[in-house]
Length: 425
Image 1: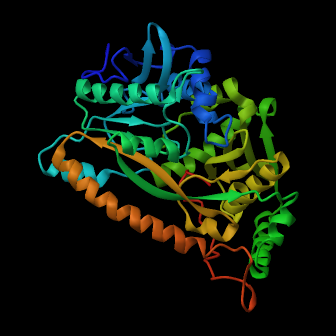
Image 2: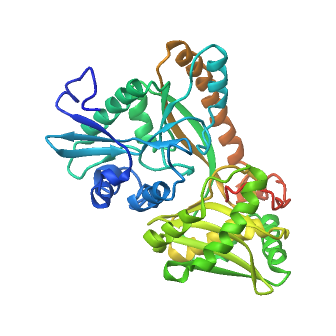
Image 3: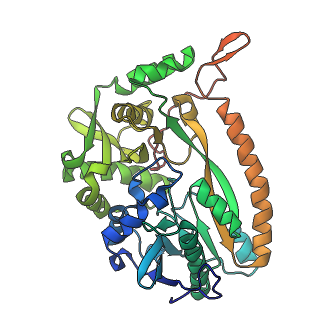
């Protein structure tokens, strides 16, 4: 793809290329865009590990992302006179798995009407429901010009690949607003994040909770480790191949029973450790000398990102301890601002995680399908906003009304079984 058709004044002098893999661009060039001041403006994260060349190339080099798996890399690069202005992680998809923003209903309706929903273009980090920049701007480039070029390039690529649509998921709100101005349909969803309000210890965090909730969490932590279970935090050179063997067994056990085919293979974890071990936190639980459960997290400069978990023994509250409470402990010790605990789970509310809006943008070629989706999204956005407002009243934090301290509404205290999805946290 040489240049986007129908150039505008903003894109007329730009060349847009689709790169069939990160081998086409060096790590230094990609990371310069991913972590530039222009890309990170208006955000609090100075290093989102999922956008690094190391993470994305590990997905490609392990074969987790490929034509065979339905994630064909076609990364967009915008250039002027051989100088790169920006890039975007883009994939040609033949299905809607591993995205965490669900459009299966759109695909079914369109195909029942005689359309072909697949292939589609996905601008995202595969298998990763973590918010971050999606239009990555080179240092010194004009963000508006580079973004316009990337959007034009995506639309040109959609035409060349006969894709039905473009989906930019888990994007930052500022990008979402710009995408809306460029004609993308806007969608919202919710997750649950823990916010560090300057806590020095886990007990400081508990002190911010209603009394009944403090007692519940203390009991859960005590019961989780009661069978003689110990917990290890492993990062950097402390992570060995034996640790990855154990964790992968947990991941496969849980994932195979829940999803049928987990997304990540064993080689991916070795490549991750080889390329960015200092950004990895493994929380591993051991009983009687044997690892029995674990969770993988990635470490940003301001946030801890919980990803996958698994276990081979079922113990009450162990999932909460390994995925949520240990993550909070680590974030407090590191001085991180928040823990992002992945997709799913209103049960996170009772553990001190608050509802947060997520954003995605969708550009659909067929006018009839676009109108139908636009109508649906208008109603969905209103529903999501209302749900977030309601859920925010159910957090366990102390609230003071005219009558004094209030414990808040009761939430379920049940522990998920070991058949929980591998999506952690």
